[in-house]
Length: 513
Image (cartoon, rainbow, N blue to C red):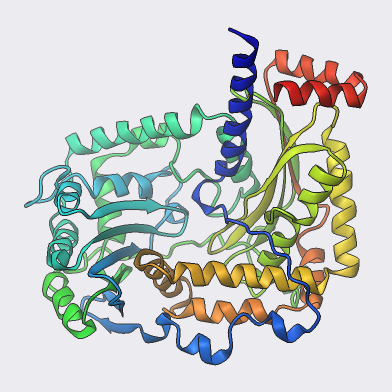
């Protein structure tokens, strides 16, 4: 291969690497923007006035509840003749019994395998043939089925959702088929992806003793062992109207749409199977108001850890640092997110600037915060220069964190972070699908369809005292440190580059990376 071609391939490898780092902890990566405001007066940090907040679309959510317990939330949006429907079941990987990892995700697959009146794959076809979209997702806390289509096909989508909830076909053939599909998905998306498998296993090991101590997709052995009777029991326990939330956003009349939903869903009965207590491995929560151990809630205390792993698929070394951070309901959540933006997530964040631009220790850094109902991990991945070791990076990060713990952040940084987080929420209010997501998450986690409006104010109310407090409580030296090393050939090249003069190493790296 000619030299230019080799250089191109190396650059492609680096681009793929950076993308993979951002995907290591899946779809929960938060986008960042660079902020450059100069704050001279704290009053200009307010993005919206209280009156403007009260006039946002989420202020007008319609609610009703069917006799079978199905909760219905409808938001009218007449900008376009379309709708987005979101059916949320309060079950995720955190609800799985020991020995049944991956069942929530497996059942997401089973829901598309046909019912008494819909053939296998017919659900997808019936919506896509009218120009609509349909999909589903599973995480630790919930399973979500969503559809989008022109408004004149609302009845079709409602019927399809009610049909499979009432008449789903569960048989040995479809179960074995989907077990194979899930195992193939695991192979393609986790096991054979550089860094992903190693980083994921490290993450769940950091959550040992909690409900998050296993992969959402499950283990190969437990997926293979899933029996039809176990799957049927899972359906009976969790796929019941009283455990579901239906959110509809679009060009509808709320009252008439509610009548349609009642028409299709009211005949569905709850299974006599008693719904058991779920998510019982509660994590001890630390808050800035409640830091003493004897005041924490019952449950495991999460600690930091440091590990080095070899990844034969990795093309380059990768360093990652992370911190155990609180869940969605914790009172520190908003301050933690703002501090994570200032430290990790902005293009011009403190650690990114220090590591990449000022000290030239890394090629790139990417922040990837993960937050679920009970707990979170806020982390950053780094692609180091060949002449840099992990200890150097950790020393710089430690010094910067100590500075924040002592002095806090500047008003300009805090204001920029507040506006960034508020703009993310406002951006989600610009389309039906994400409006439905905001409503659904608000109901599921806070029993409030307008929770996103409260979040706007919650971000705004964070002050520098809280920033320093959460820095001390969470962003301390008790961190999660992961070093992923590539194959021996690459490690030898890295060692060789380390002993060369830095200027020569940088020249070689720029040429080939």
